[in-house]
Image (tube, rainbow over all chains, first blue to last red; front, top):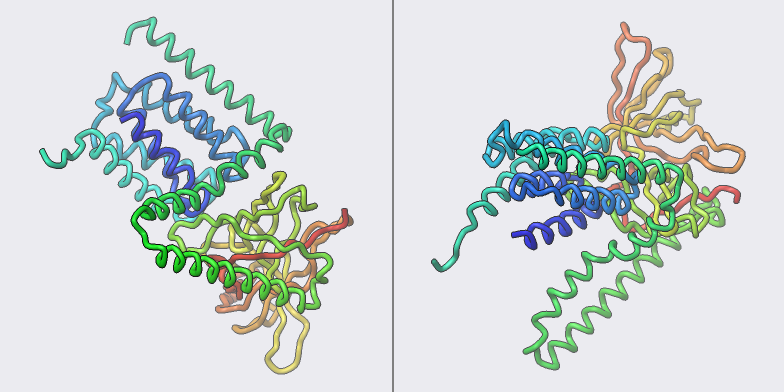
Length: 135
Length: 271
């Protein structure tokens, strides 16, 4: 699963810096944090933000700060809430995408955040209960 | 979570947040100027490479004829690309204003938008940077139409904020071509989403009409950085005039389709 997630992260980085403004990396980082719950996700969030800022010619560090904070908040509440649930993944990815888009000052913030929420949800469901073909 | 694990978790978070802030401040001091170009050069053609790999996978059982056919198609595509590029260059250099010696042709290599091809992109990434004498604030044009302004420059790439972006605003005047050419109204162009812009802060006493053209007033500094005057911003598509308001405003539509741009021209300042 780790490899699949990393591959998806690289793919979303390429898509987000060339053809779409949907904050796919934010949704993906939320899903990775919820599913794996490991400390090295901080490193992943930091590196993803760093590369994203470089490729999108943004101010280096801003996305890293944001993504590291998102990971921190999710992991902080892992004992208080049941985080591996559909509502949590949707709300967390929707809210974090919404704030991220506000920072980037792009248009259609609400709709884009909703779409990323839905994509994260599908991805979460798929990775949590993978469809076994030919069983 | 045990106390030990909790402490460890906070320590990891603090380390990464401090590291992020450190690179943020180093980035502000332009320490990563070279890294921008380096990573950009390595990673930007990845999508086309992925496509080529997937296309090349099937080549095992192809006949010689099919391979030849594909080579010919590739040549045709390359030829078409070259002809389009030449047409764009000669078209731009036929325009007497801005002067062709001040212009630098640049290819658009990225234009992220919400819905590709439908919604206008927020910004463009072009394949020219500081190495090509581009500076932050340089105007970007297509023929005599304003496309945007250079917002960020790395060694080999630049980010261009489009005129339709809400982050941009600049002074502009209107030109009426109905009847006689009359003195235009002065206002401020502000980007909204999509292809449209708003011409705001126009005095109620001024006469603006649907179909009038909006051009830049010009705000170049002494080094030649900024918008040159008389570049076409767009055409007025609707006017909002309320007697109770201080100013009137108008919706302006650009004549350039931002989502289909392949090549643009940067107006270089004096270096």
